[in-house]
Image (cartoon, rainbow, N blue to C red; front, side):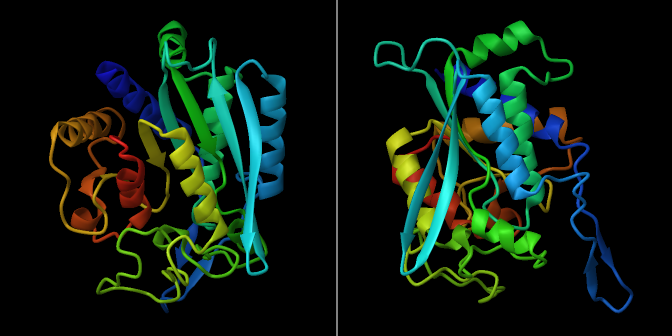
Length: 298
């Protein structure tokens, strides 16, 4: 299982890094320091509706590999829904022959359009409608036979729709809560650069339907590996993100070594590696909660 963990981590970072080379959002800074953002180029990016339509069609074309469900939740007059695609090739997971469980989540912040494009690209590769350049397909299939992957292509659909309506820098959900601050680890903690608008944690931990859905998914699926994909910088983060330290122990040492290998192979040595809190002062309660809630190793 340990070797499969290593292979799978490298494989999926290869997916991410190989798939992102031709997807861009252009931001131009004027001399007066006001930012002007180029309107969404739908020749480069799908609309949320178009992207989800393509994913549904892809799943429909490959029923032997994919299944898809839409999970809904709501409270206080606000509702959300999250699509979850499950990939399982060959024989299903069983207690006798357990498979490695991987959770990939994208689009937690509405403005990070490229992440959901990556989700679509990865699903296309898993379907074999697209191929990874330089990857031996037989070797890839031998790994994929041993895994179950759940993909959340667009965690924050309501926030994404706000971006598409013209609020291009919006990261929060449809009622102004940062889903990356709505989990229970150190909920409400304010760092020195805390922005109450951008980082509104909500009225309580898991107050938001999107967070509730993701918690339920994590608890029921119990992934061995979880990758939460964001955009905005070149970095490969590991716990912890809410403080300037990393956990101790062999699994975390192996994680760091794997990230170093991915950096050497695919980042031209540019990617920052380590805890988000220690490397750039990032606070990501989601990453820490996932590790604490269901004891994810990677």
